[in-house]
Image (cartoon, rainbow, N blue to C red; front, side):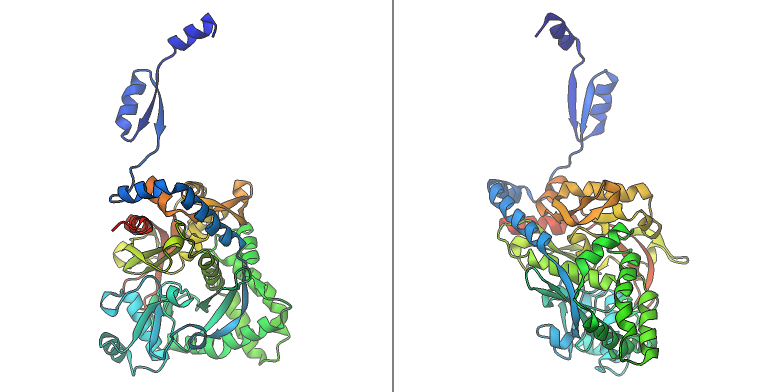
Length: 470
């Protein structure tokens, strides 16, 4: 080193790194010290032992995560047909009602979930009226179980009963299947807990007309519909795969329309089906969700993997499952949603976070892909720039980047995919989730949309479960 270089080095002001409280950085800068601010948070409470144990196994965890992510990347979910829940799903009796989120029983259910159970009981003919359905539910006459435990997913309350028609999604790569009911549209609908006669009549029409015509159109196609490819195209058109599905629904009706026109079905019914799909921007969500489940389920069961394979809410609790812990649930309290409300409603009217639709975030869509959909902020609130910031922040807690879901605004970078529970716990950065807001009382319906923080407790418990720490 030359004398000039040495003098320059000795004469340079000292540099410092500041971790945590900003006050120290401000004081050092006042004294002329160059400060590098480090954005750091301590691990979540009670996870220190788990993280220490898993640090010793870091190489094994990394290999497991590589395998889990590879299975997600390889998944190719196809729409292969339509069936009936009682015939498709395991252990579905006439008195079985599946629901969104982790396990829950009647006394702990929120208003929208209770209302949807009542509506499904009336639809199935298991009760004479709403009061009778509530009495039977409280008396233990019905069986409840999570959709996720029976190969299904459901938006909002997510209630599935035995005679409901379901779309069948098959992951061509692994052969596993997932299922979802048809989207009912907006307004007074079962998924928000509505259960009056108009709701029941619509469910019957979906069962008797929509499902039949939709299935017949699928059979006329040359090949099953590739939901992964269609979702990827929708992201190029401004969807994010969770709360904005306008492009996906448009692509779907474009694919189906020639087959619909050729059907040997009553023309009035075919026209009603076409109008129903075209007039319901969220119709495609009920295909994206089972496609997401088929993708995430394929990654389940990889020993030592910390990749999240399920995030789901029942309106009371938020549940997480990891690849390395299989079917075990880790829960925390459902969050309060921060968002935009329809006129006449506010936070005091809102139910806690509810629905299986966070399966979209689990595979790199929804909140993790908001950069593809700046228009989503007009629905959930915030600035267009915030959509970009949300996606960029998620690369910190994910294991890789999607090979299928590319984001134009990021130079066609793959969306962040493979939420790493350990990265969440270590960084304090929670997955970004955008969602609809249900009224806390059954039947009123959607009153807004926004963003919600998943409970950190669920991820902390999952980390301890992976490390086998009580």
